[in-house]
Image (cartoon, rainbow, N blue to C red; front, side, top):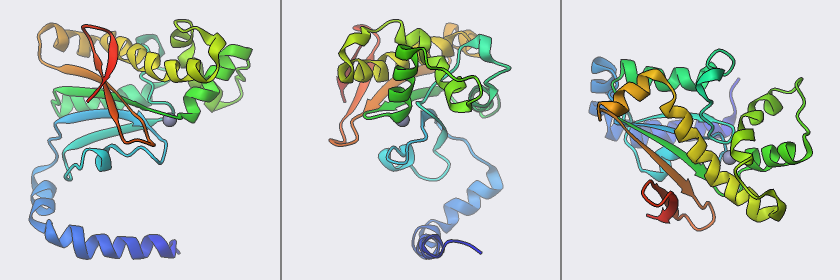
Length: 207
Ligand SMILES: [Zn+2]
């Protein structure tokens, strides 16, 4: 029927969170959502933007994919799920802020790194096709240092995703008109420390 542990957790959520915030949920139900931020993060179960930013229901539009990648504009027909979520957030919900959030120990980045390094892409695998998107970021790093190179790719790929974001016409237009802001961030899962991208120095700095 349904997993017992989830059933129990749901009941806890209903009796605790839902009932305490009943009015909020009812008004969100009537008025719809108006989130302030779009967050693109990884599917990794250890990285949950709603938990990290202690968000209330309706505050964050979160889209998660493997390795928090925003594909380039050319990929709009092939990898449209991510950009469709962003387009919805920007053009329909009128959200003004987009955050790409990476993390330490990202399995997607690690696998993509190896695939790039070994030229080991397999066109029959959806994971492989998706991680192929990391190639442009991979080309920007020194790939000879293994663990350190993978860490570097985690951050460089965030920058590449932000550049890709800017290539979408509906985003480019709003950036030119100073209507939206974009941000890069990365969280160290073990220490809980977040770093954010400083566009002036092009480096990540602790928050
Ligand atoms: Zn990840």
